[in-house]
Length: 62
Image 1 (cartoon, rainbow, N blue to C red):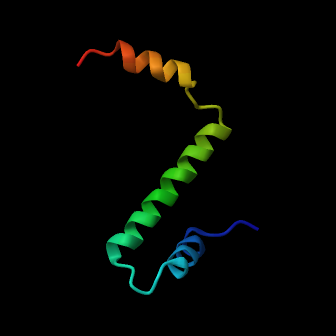
Image 2 (cartoon, rainbow, N blue to C red; image 1 turned 90 degrees about the vertical axis):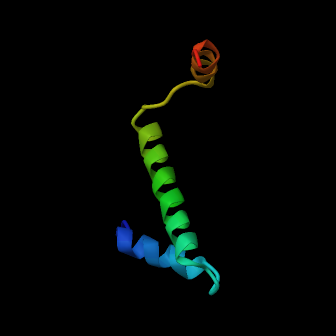
Image 3 (cartoon, one colour; image 1 turned 60 degrees about the horizontal axis):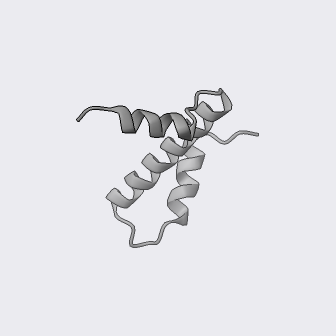
């Protein structure tokens, strides 16, 4: 059974220390969202090889 976003957020918050700030909570939620987005992209084959990234970075003009 898949967890809802609310359940995931609650578990994440429960894992933080009692001294966590709202900024800490927002950061953890942001990182979690970015990880989930990246994993979904990888599963869908929307990735760029390491070599392509290096080539793009080396060929760009600043």
